[in-house]
Each structure stands twice: as structure tokens, then as C-alpha cells.
Amino acid sequence: MAFNVESKIALVTGANRGIGRAIVENLLAAGSKKVYLAVRNPASTSELESKYGERVKTLIVDMEDSQSIYALAEQASDVELLVNNAGRLEISDPLSDNAALALQKELTVNTFGLLHIAQAFNEILVQNHGALVQMNSVASMKNFLGVSTYSASKAASYAITQGLREQWAENGVQVLSVHPGPIATDMAASAGMLEVAEPADVVAKGIIDALAAGQFHLFPDAIARQFEQQYKSYAETIIEAPASE
Image 1 (cartoon, rainbow, N blue to C red):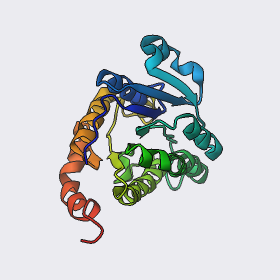
Image 2 (cartoon, rainbow, N blue to C red; image 1 turned 60 degrees about the horizontal axis):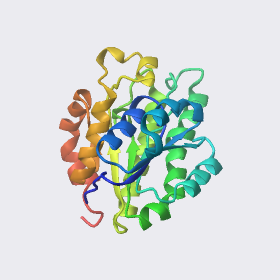
Image 3 (cartoon, one colour; image 1 turned 45 degrees about the vertical axis):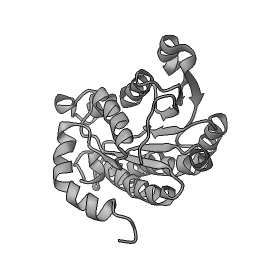
Image 4 (cartoon, helix red, strand yellow; image 1 turned 30 degrees about the vertical axis):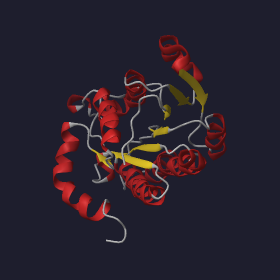
């Protein structure tokens, strides 16, 4: 199943900075008709609005609030490409004093946020023969000390992404699970990973190519591709195989 972003209407959560902003700009460069900028603070997208004019439109969403997510879907019923990029990272490990609270915060955005946005946009994506891009992480496959609870939330999100792929397959909705390594963003800086981080454009360009190729997994950067080399056989035979096999 291939998906060409040209002339499509997209929505990107967390569109104001980092990977989200790079996705917006690369989609527009690739010919997307319009991109909704779904953010908590509408003032944060003023630069993008000035640069791209009517090709972008800012919508307010709080990924911690399911009602806000459903309201977002009501304002963007023409969406064909949904990019769930917004995420939360806390510095926490299983034995940290803040572990339970950190995990709760991360699950609310990273995992329940995905559930709510998939349910809110379900009928829209089916009707428009659309695609979902879910920003997961290499941390969904291996727990990294310092961000252990984040890894746990992303592992849960990855499992849900797999379920969405199977449920939507019969309706022609494409699903792409993106697993970056360290990318030059504020989140990478907070995790102390900027020295090995790659530009956000690597992820954005990879998403466009992966959608066109009909892929389910994307490992866009050098560190992520090391995971891909070890994971590919398992992914192809277990994760990506039809349920009947």
C-alpha cells in the first residue's frame, strides 16, 4: 500500500518545532496541499504561518485531553495524512523517586494520546483512504537508562501502532511506525544526546519516502538503522506478516 503526499491534506501534532516542524516543511516542499499545525500554543506557529500563508492552518490541541483531541478531528475532517508526532519525555528510571509520576505523564501523551487520536480520526481516515504516521522510537525496542519510563511508554505505543495497522488494513488506511534514534531536538538535548543526534530533516524526508514505498517500519538515521539490521528479520516474519500466517 503506497501513499503519495503530493496534493494531500495533512495534520501534524507537535508541529511547531523539532521533528514536527521539519515534517511540516518537507510535506509542503513535496507538494502537500495543506498542513494543519496541531499545537497547544497557537502563538508558537506564527513563523510557519507567515512563511506559508494559506497552505498551513493552526489548530489548538491538548494531547493530554481526549475531548480536545476529538474537537481537533471535528475541525479537520478533510485530513488524509495524520502525523502523530507530539510526545513527552521525562528523565526517569524504574527506581527513581519520580518513576510512577513520570510514566503516568508519558503514557498520557505518548500512549493514550495515540489511542484517542486514532479513535477520533478513525472514520475520517477510512473515508479519505488516508494514512497514519506514528512517531515511535528506537526506545520502543530497547530500554535506555535515564529515559526508562519513556521507553516503556513508547513500547506501548508501538504495540498499539501494530494493532492499528492490522485493524485498518481492510479499510485501506496505511500505517507507518517511525523509530528514530537521537535527533537534534529539544527532547534530545534534555536526554543529553545532542552529540550523536542527526538533523530532523532526516526523519521528515524518510517519512515521505517510506509512505510512498508502503513501508510499515522506518528507521531513518544511522543509529536507528543499526537497530533495523538486527530487527529486520523478526519484523518481516512476525510483526509485518499477515495475521493468518
